[in-house]
Structure formats: structure tokens, C-alpha cells
Length: 306
View 1 (cartoon, rainbow, N blue to C red):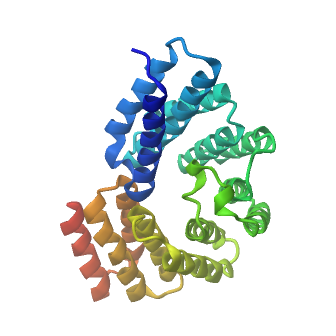
View 2: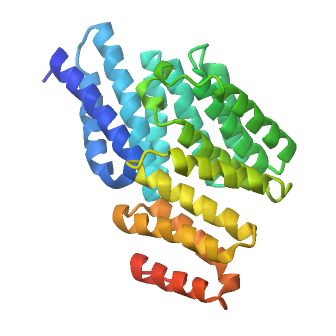
């Protein structure tokens, strides 16, 4: 059955809500978002005017990227790749070039996470070429951040550091009111959080990056909206790893403990994975009481030991 203007507006509103929930807690509402996406794709096959059809493709792109993000958080990597692809095709049909570039950036990040930085870098470059002048400074900054991530994973730290600097330059023109709704998660807090991660990647090549990383995470946590609990947990795990690299073991465990408290509430597999990574790293100091206490907490809260 075809939908009217009011229903279409409600579908668009729901897509924004699902994206907001993903920013807050990750993949918790994946099945609901997937059902909504399936309904939208069914509507696209109905005869509509060109204007309505483009709006349907745009919302399919929006929802498709959210569904992919949620699947990725849950560790459903094949599903994430599938829905990123669906979202990208829909963005092109809608002629939403900036959204398409953002989806390509998300795909790039996924590839880098899976250990394919060369493929990730190619996707970033496609995004940079394909945004057709629609990208805001925020989006351009995030594309540079993805570029930096790929370069460092490819053992090209000089290019990685250059890309971070370019990202910081782009973000200096940040105007949140100019950003579309699907990009508004990239606040100053979010940008500092991802910069913290990228500086931490550089530490193996330049220990001076440690201070930059710690400062970026601290700024992110100070500015982060409390409702974005998953992002706060990731900030805490990132900062905990930095404190460990700085030799501050007790402070590292105390910071990771804050992430663990959040993990217990939201059950995000990505957050759980990051906590496990930290625990494996800190186990070299297991003779310290603070480490043994943290290990036991992880076992109790997450139900597993590392």
C-alpha cells in the first residue's frame, strides 16, 4: 500500500530516531531498525513521483547506514558490509552525494577495523572525490581522520600525522548548524575522541603522540553529552590504554572501570571487546592488586575471563 506525505515524514523522523539510538547505545535496536529499512525498501518499488522516490531513497540510505553501524557494533560484519552497500546505492539514487561520502567513510572504517587498511584508504579517496562539493568542514575533517587511520595501519606514520593535522584544520571551521542530521553526532567531543584514537595509533612511531592522545580523550570526556553513553565508554577505554602506555597502571584500571560500569548497562559488544583488549594489555601487571581487582570485576560483570 502506498504512503502519503504524513507517513513519509514519520518514516524520515523514525530514521533519525534510530540513528540517534545508535549513537547513544550501539546495536541494541538493530532488529527494529532493520524491519523499518525493509519496509522502506518495499515502498521504493511502488509507483511514486520522482520527488517522493528520491526522498524514499534518501531515507533508505540514512536507515541503511544506521543498520550497518548497528550490525557492526554487534559483530555482524557480513551484514554490516551488505547494508553499507545498500545504503550507498540508495544515496546515489537520491543524489545525496555528501551522505554517500559519509557512507563510504563508514565502509572505510569498517575495512580498517577488519585489517584491510589499503582497501579502507581507497574508499576514503572515493569519498573525497565523490562528495561533489557538498561536504561540510565536519565531513571533510572526518574523511581526513579516516585517511590518517588507514595510513598509520599501513605503517606510514608521516602521512598519518599529516592527515590528522589536515583534519584539525578542517574542523576549525566546524559549524554544527550547517551539518545534516546524519552528521550531527560529530560534535567537538566526538572529534576529540577520534583524534585521541588516531594519536594513540601513532605512539608506536612517536611517543610524543601520547600527550596529544590523552589530552584529546580528556577534552572529549569533558564535553561529551551524557546521553551518548557508548561513546563515553569508548573514550574511557581509549584513555585507559593511554594511561597504561604512560605507566600509570592504577589510573588506567580506574579509568577502564568507568567503561566497565557503562558496559554492564548497554551490552555493546564493541565496548566489551575494547575492555577485553585493555585487560589483555594490563595483565602484564597482574602482580598489582588493582589489576587483579579489575580482572575480577570484568569476570563478574561480563561473565567471561581473559
